[in-house]
Length: 257
Length: 304
Image 1 (cartoon, chains in turn blue, brown):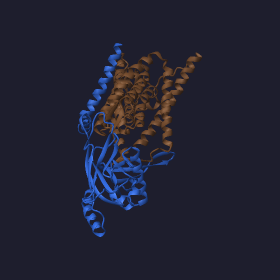
Image 2 (cartoon, one colour):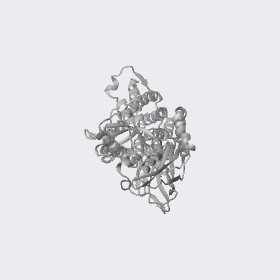
Image 3 (cartoon, chains in turn blue, purple):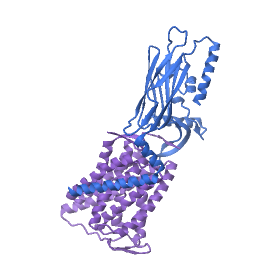
Image 4 (cartoon, chains in turn red, cyan):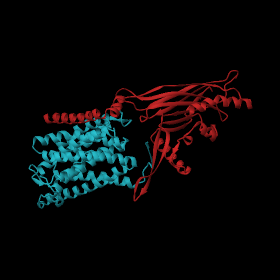
């Protein structure tokens, strides 16, 4: 989806450029500190450093003032959002709604609060914030209900540290270099992530670039996860043997004392 | 000490988990219960997903009951005959529990069910035990001997058909009674991640009317095998057993259990029972309040 949108971006810019004389687009050169995040024993989360340069267009004597927005998005999955209500004195899950594509991780960092940089329409097109997340609801057609559950989902994910918005987290130095730090908690889902950088000037996205990041379990953590998933019988027997053995050893140790 | 739990998908402080294991192990050694009733809620409170908590706590209970069961076996404190019937029931129970788990999970009611079960079970057992042990302490202090309760099984047990002789327990009852009891504890073990000792022991004493000398040993024997079955069932169905989490819990609990057993030899049994009753009641009250209070999270998200 996002790729398709970007494919049209140069054309859109060209059309815009034809109508009124805006300076030619700058070139964004993004880089990310790690293209592969290894979730292994001792993993406590990662700090992703996204940095790069905004190269002013040829012929421009000085660099213009740009705003930078960085969006990091994790693998999408279908989810059920459940809502608790008080029934007969206790809080139980009373209603639910499904969404086809909720990203497992979503972080937006910007040089200024997004509403100050672009209007709501542009922000919605480029998904520049949690309020504009496209979740593709399943089933329900009532927009108020959809919105309530979408809001609930975002709130839950924010609480888990998996969704965040960080206005002011992008630092731009000398109008050319930018850098942003995005924290990934230890509970990040594994999969393919995208990091998109947008250069925005006068409310318009003038350049964008995307990089890919893979988050994957490695080594022992991967071994355990794969074994639990694909060799349940052996895995279960190992767990049983381990617990019996440890209980027995402790019993023997203390019997001698 | 940060440890990444590969199934729970979460980094935790390993020492906290070992400490948690030690605490529940201490209880299990002192009181002869598995301690699972504390492990599962505390793990959930710490942020471990409920299914992973219940699945991994079961293997901790296995570890904690091994040495206890061995000690009782050496003393001849296990009725293997009734134990085998209980285990057969327990294995059937874990199967039923696994089905229930899946249905409730699909309905989104698993967490509420687990909480309600905890409140009802812990609340009733805790109050019964509290009243009984308080009476025993009062009787000891006033020097008046308590009325000796005549050991006999519940009239409902007597009405069941097909009677077997269980020599060690001194019983002539239908094997259906221990089988049903085993099924009930098996279901609870699967759903709540507990060993079921604190339900099994009073049920053996007051419903089946078993001889006191074999109650604790037979209960440990049954718990040992049923928690093994539970671990296997979870490994094959929910795939939520976290070996790293289970190992950390085990290290703490097997050591804690041994230390608890040393304490237990010195303390007075009725005082121990009263303390256990108070702990059980505290957990029940906390969970009951949790059901009624407005939760922090109105919305929860699970994968489809």
